[in-house]
Length: 274
Image (tube, helix red, strand yellow):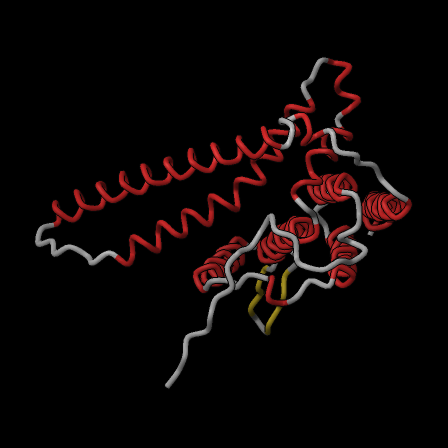
């Protein structure tokens, strides 16, 4: 008797229990690092910046003590899509070429596809690391402090920070509610439909019912969250919490800046001449 392997769902915007040096970092530091590394890989998506950023993320994951159970399972269809993309990119050709006897195989397209895939995985891992080590309540004060210079231009930074915080808080709750609605729908006995037109009509009716139930759940959650915010002093308290970097944050920012500068220098000077 064989048992199916249990898949691990994607769990985001919920910190991993426990504490670590990465957990204790200021939320603004993590936001700056994510923006810096994202810009670096956007302008220089080459192997040297990828290697340096990957090493940094690996060290951070090790320090954060992220358990393997937090990593979601990769579905089979995604592996099939990656394999199909690799085959299609290989057909595109390009240098360098690999010679096997009288035959030549161009690997340029495959290398570009692999590099693009690695960049996507690295940025995804960086985002998940921040999600697993950052409390959602710390994001709004950090965004408000980082955007404080923009207030000179009349930009409502505090309102943006509050909207971002409420969105991050509501997303996991709504996701759980929609999962519950979908599970309840699957428990309903399927109707016996004989014609294709009846199946299409039944599918559209079920979609309308799910959307109506989802909107009702979202409104109920919004009402409960509004009452909780009013009880705690209003939306101004969300972005007004004390938030500032500490010594460890300056060390992390310095190391991240060094990684970015070294990557750009190596890519623009040494490797460009090879």
